[in-house]
Image 1 (cartoon, rainbow, N blue to C red):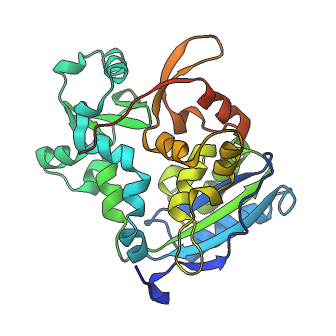
Image 2 (cartoon, one colour; image 1 turned 90 degrees about the horizontal axis):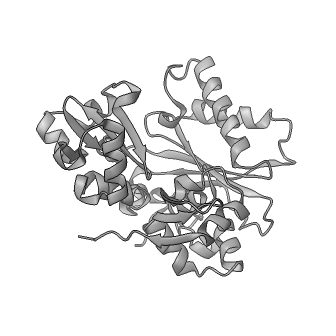
Length: 315
């Protein structure tokens, strides 16, 4: 698709290319549509600039503003959340046997007898709008997170990925978002602390409600595989071209250690798998969640201990 300059992302700091240093990680940060704004962006950047390791072990290497039209035309949201969307649409049919067992144990209700529904069906049955379902508050024991998916008990209905309708609704042609990428040798776990400081700074500046969780203000890459997923969606060049797999740091690391780029795509598209832990016990996990805050080597080691993979039935 040929784009006019107005349709393209406005790249303020161009991507310098991937890093081949395994001790450096690339962390994407992008604002949620409801929190996007120049003041929010500048407040977050000030937190980074005041970090003692700024410019030595922590650098801002990419900054862009992505138009809502571009995000919609490129189907970035749908591609980024494709697994969550699959579960939100198919509901109980998407569950693996292990997920059904965990559901039964957690809610003390047989999975087969429970009223488990995808969030889009839940909107119709509950006569709610996307934002209404998103804002429904429930106690912590009425929420279950597993394999990258969430189940929220609303009244007597178990709603799968309650947030997906709102995410799609909030991202429209009029909602531009700011995207940043930081290159750091401090690790993903350290960036989690920094993200908390960003959220606190926004609250102290009166830009957001202090009770709002950071995840509702902005997203950041929490691990190596999420970095790849974020990069495929939100890393762009001045001509509007989006980055390809071989242009992303961790993808290059995996490729150098024997994984083909097609194999990496398959891992991202079908991330629910069975992994053998160091103690020999097998666990079913979502790859992105399982490698959260891991180093490059730690995440690769887990992939090498993958024993089986769950493939979705596409429809």
